[in-house]
Length: 196
Image 1 (cartoon, helix red, strand yellow):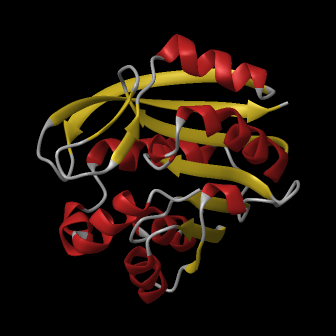
Image 2 (spheres, rainbow, N blue to C red):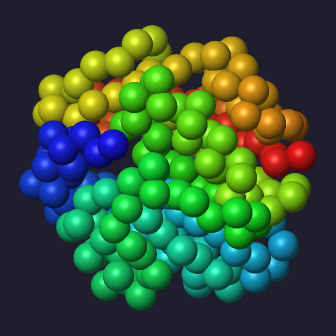
Image 3 (cartoon, helix red, strand yellow):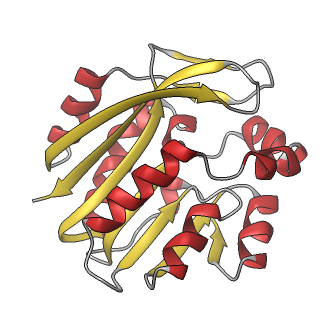
């Protein structure tokens, strides 16, 4: 299920979002994530935005597929030569297809009651011993931000429970904070987990 208001907001602000680029914290997390994968491995960028991260992965020799629900982002990613397709989290149906799945501040736009379903699909789409990266904003509940985007907020203990219930192991977490499109400084959490 796509939240049309969120997609519309991203479509209207696609250029502003693209101007944010790949933040320093994301560059480090991406490098750490890639270091866990086999050279030339397969990656899904789930909620790829304009394709910044997918482009870096490709430049480092990985086989990358990308998906996003915002048409303007797919166009931007394709302009970077990313194999990007329009799709929502519910469209993920691959089985044991990826060495890694990168979900960088994308699943926070899915309702909390759908989160276990999405994690189960991600777990299924990973190869055995595949790596899942997840970036989310910290907090509680669900709400829209000042520009209309839907957000689900999580705390670390809650996320660990969700990931373990979905079959993930070896969960590690780090924290940060920074501005996004609304220019507010928001705390966030980044987790890495393995398919057993």
